[in-house]
Amino acid sequence: MNRPWMRRLSSLSRWLHIYLSMASFGILLFFAVTGLTLNHTEWMAGQQRTVQAKGTVKLDWVKTDHISKLEVVEHLRNAHQIRGALSDFRVDETQCGVSFKGPGYSADAFIDRESGRYDLTETRSSFVAVMNDLHKGRDSGKKWAWLIDASAVLMVLVSLTGILMILLLRKYRATGLTAALCGAAASIAVYAYFVP
Picture 1: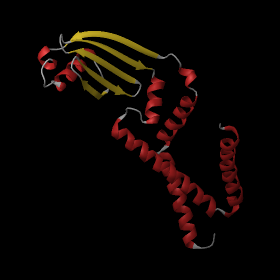
Picture 2 (picture 1 turned 120 degrees about the horizontal axis):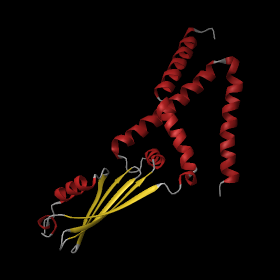
Picture 3 (picture 1 turned 180 degrees about the horizontal axis):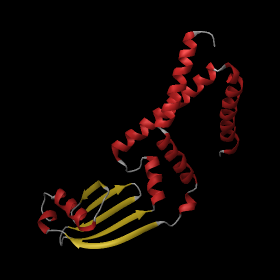
């Protein structure tokens, strides 16, 4: 590598590869581990806890034509320490259905509009199930979706700077590219021959 621009490009790609890898280390490790746990959900079977509760809301919140949704939601949150985001609030002639969702979490309340009484079912999953839902971006909100997108961009940049480094290192170019092609070919072969 005699040309100065190639030395600078090699140095820059190595610098980018190292620091992008380190900056994304935590999130890459998270997605690698949760990818494994998602692929083996049987390891975590039966790690879910469901709680039933009953209660009453004020009649003037639900018996009128104008349902006091905010008051109902806040009452349910405060009375039962509900932590998920509001995902649905359904109203029909006889009842209101209120659903909350979060990673590894759901709570559903059914309120009788005539009496104000409700039944609540809250389901909390294990820590691993919460992590798996975060991996998939399920019920985790827009900010977490942005983090998933940012981590995908980081993975692409780490991959591209790694390929660039191999291309610029003459001594390791052939073996590095061969290893990359073998890895890609093995993935394609597994898909072509073993995936139904």
